[in-house]
Image (cartoon, rainbow, N blue to C red; front, side, top):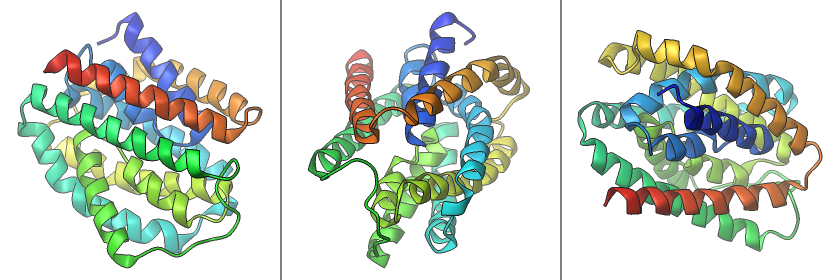
Length: 247
């Protein structure tokens, strides 16, 4: 798995993480999916993503809102359990095709929502959302997290409830940290997280740090809406390519 394309995939994924506060797993999972199976990708990305979530949550700590991230975290953790066991036992080709459709759908949803936005960033006042919608998004996000480490559904939810961009980034990363901690235990107990995966993550860590700080640099200088629209287009193209290559 330690090849130049994978090094570039990690750097690109965490550039996106630094710019947007999410979508690193979608980018890394899609690009690395051309070279290996998701059961090998997810534990490596989990180990790489943990410190990046911790860093962003700390830097945006003033935006943390327990009423946003705690309920979502509990639901995501509950959904992670069936997702992890399907990752362990499911057919690799089927999982890749499913992942491709997930990427396209989420990218399209994010793109259409950004197109409708009147300005950059998250609106400046906290909004309420349906409890039923919270339950559905939380459980589905958990299943996707267990399978692929993908939390874009809850990103879509938090973007509708957070009051500003600091809250958006902070509460997303708090949910990611809670889910990541639980998934570390699940991956370890099911044999998905191996010593080889840990060694691979350690070798890729410098590229994660490089990408993260490049992304943070651009986050502070580019209009956020421009960066997020670019990411969603990239995700849709990558997802379509992954589907077509494995049909």
